[in-house]
Length: 102
Image (tube, rainbow, N blue to C red):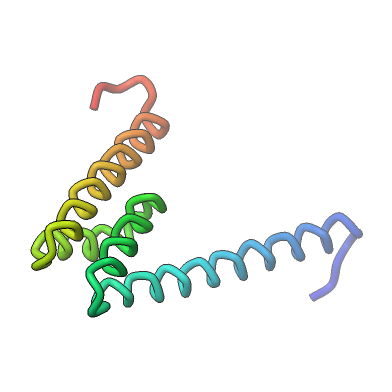
C-alpha cells in the first residue's frame, strides 16, 4: 500500500488503531458476557450492571436472560440495566431523527 502524503499515512494509522480498538472492545464484551454464567451471584449482578453501563445493544440478550436468574439481586440489576439500555436506544433514535416524534 503506497501513501500519497504523510497525511494519508497518518489517516491509515488512525483507521488501523480504530479497527484494533473495536476488535479489542468486542473481545472484552464477549468475555464480560461469558461471565454472566458465573456461579457467584455477585459476579453475575456485576456483569449485568456493566452491560447496562456500556449500553451496547450486543448485551441485551444477556441482560434479558438475567431477568430469569434465581438471585433477586441479579434480577434487579437486569431491570436497571434494561432501563439504561432503553434510555440509550431512545437517545440514539432522537439523535438519528431529531425532527420526528418517536
